[in-house]
Length: 392
Image (cartoon, rainbow, N blue to C red; front, side, top):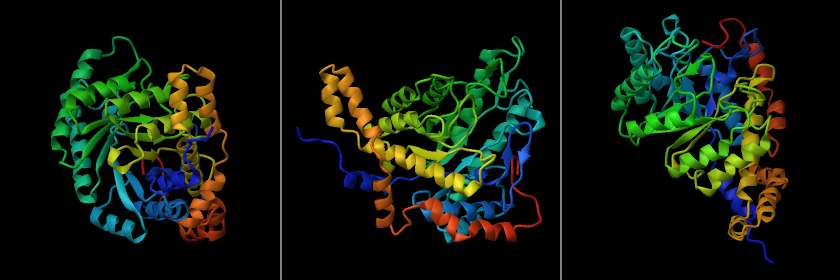
């Protein structure tokens, strides 16, 4: 029987159009609650973070935007920052808010029982929309650390009402081409209950808000054993998947490199995206990394992460969808599983090397960056000043 599986040529055509957004904070110092580990050559300003992100795009060709975190990446002139990014061959992307690093937010931000503190948090979110107006960004990404640590500490239903009211205020401020994407997280730093703990809570609020509100799936924000591809498929079916924060974890929200812990899971997620057409730009689904490189060098860590997403995507593109559907319709359990495994077991690295060569890129981005001397250059130049890190 002749195979109906996509060939490498059609897979490469899609892979060339793939876009993976980089997080500015991945280029700063990070660590655990025990220590933040400093490295040489770490950026000291948002401008230098963009310089480093541009290196990732230079060697991979598919990472042309950089997400900002406010106030970590606050500058006096966002138009000038956008100009600098363009000069480096990248653009400014998603604007991420921060309502978790202020003492006023110890008991919550948009869900806090004190109306003054809730308004302070909303004002910050509105400030982020102002930044979007200046940068031309489409998405405002919201993650709230709000929750409680003890039973009875606060009224759970009332906190949901406060959250809904705060989100409505921000939603009304969005421009016609702007969106709000709401992230969720199972736990931490709140340990009794979290106000947006799962995709269902985020989905419920987004549906109530309207079409410009979407759900963000952070691949590290789930209980062990959670079927993340089911969540992805459900949100795609409802047209409510705004995007991903790609990372990997072994236990909780480790923010390790995407594909490190369970590359098969990443493949399964990308398979659902391919089937639903979510790789097409018009789908509106944003693919972004959200990682902290605690012990590995920052730029190579991001390059390797982009390559991991590319490999999972390439395998998903090689799934013989017609054969899979035929096996499913015939209730051929093992046959259907074999179709997926045939694609997953394919070594797609030659396809990606060929694609990079066709794009006038080095077929081995990691080796090419190592040879470039950029890491040694910035280590020598970036002496003095305050290195970027958590909160800066």
